[in-house]
Length: 329
Image 1: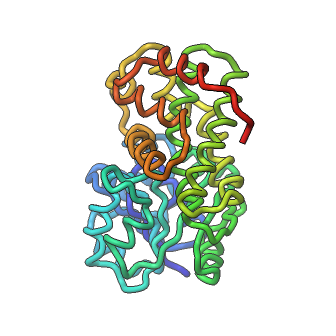
Image 2: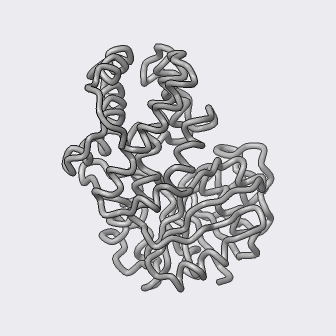
């Protein structure tokens, strides 16, 4: 593989375009914003979403899907709630059988579908894969060491994709379980908001560790109920991503939770943020999905209720601490 396309000119899409270029691929970054396209092509920098990071000269930006037509694979990095519309717009320029690697983390509101299901409906001729794992865009773009999960049911295609994007600082680990990889990426964003609330409320490191651990149990139950494998979410795309996004204010989702825990409104927590905190949109979908699957997910339930304004932070905390004692698992 010699040519890659990246759909989505935000921080993560730009970082992945940088990865592709460093791997020696001819790389086209599709962005919706004209100012992103102009800045990448003229100054080799995404000044809107990833300022201060010099991009490889091999990254070329465009706002025309036709420019992705020669790509041998595409990384789809549009936000989860906009992925269906973006893929539908791209489908006209897509070659049949094109590998599309889904990099958005979330569950579609309303339909409660995973991104692979959205891809199957919006661009049924595509060959799916999922990229997920502990990764901050700025660190990846600057070439800091990162390991991620690349899930693909077609092992031969998976190896081809892994070899195409791998660099000494960007290591894909292969898996066959796309459902587990997707579930891990979607649920961890909701749990990151909850961890931010714990930090913002000053509840201490013990509470923080407990929430990550019990949250991981919820994540695993949801993944398995969807048909994923517990082994998958015990790896980079589940536990690894959860630890990262629940442990640093660099996480957009955790930063929202921090603000809520300190008493700010959701509107204030989101004000001025250009990048999307996927957990805010994912929370009601994860809650509805867990209910439909009959999965007990009290932390996700409480987080969704806080975001919806149904209960306050203190009420949510009291409710979780008042739950009946049970065996661990």
